[in-house]
Length: 278
Image 1 (cartoon, rainbow, N blue to C red):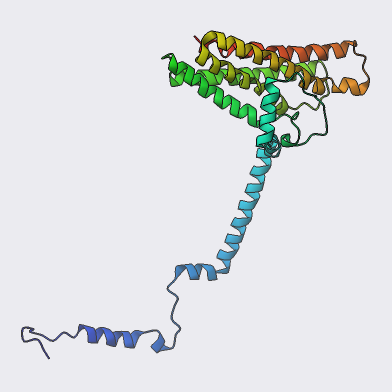
Image 2 (cartoon, rainbow, N blue to C red; image 1 turned 135 degrees about the vertical axis):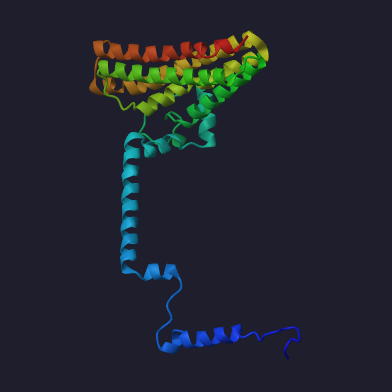
């Protein structure tokens, strides 16, 4: 029934229906075109070839990046040095504080968790981070804390570690020592001194300078003995294999180098911590 207030009849719906019926593609016998651009793209063979070529380029690029990274940063070897467990960490910390009765021996290289004598990077890395945090705590208790000073403390420790590694590598080259001691091994052995540094600073915060000097002195002697006995297996191993006389000139140089590296650890432990205890 027509609306009494409507002046003209509404014919728009009827016209649109009629136009659609006359102009629809199905009525002319043509198939309906796909309205999905994704479907049209996937149906195009050129697009499929482009996608396959792009995937191939991405795979080649990833392989190239992995090779270059592994050449400069040996990821596989680093995983070996972090293969530790709780039992190993406990034994190694005990060895660092009490190295006097331990039997040091050089066996076939295995993951650290299978041999407490093997060097690792987990303890040095965690000890370095803890050392920086303890240094910040010590500076805070003395109202001397600042981000710049804490950053200087961390960068100084890293700079000394880098200098140690470079000096030892140069010395090994000059003394012509063919050893299986790698650069990562050196970083691991030199990083063990942070454990004793942490103990000294913590005892200094609790008991003053007396506690600091007592604990740090014990840790300095312990790290000296530990380094002598550990590096002796690495640096003097070639001499033992070659049958070089104990009092030979080259063997004497190797012994001096081992003692110099071990003696440098207590000096650096004191140098990097004495200003943190007052």
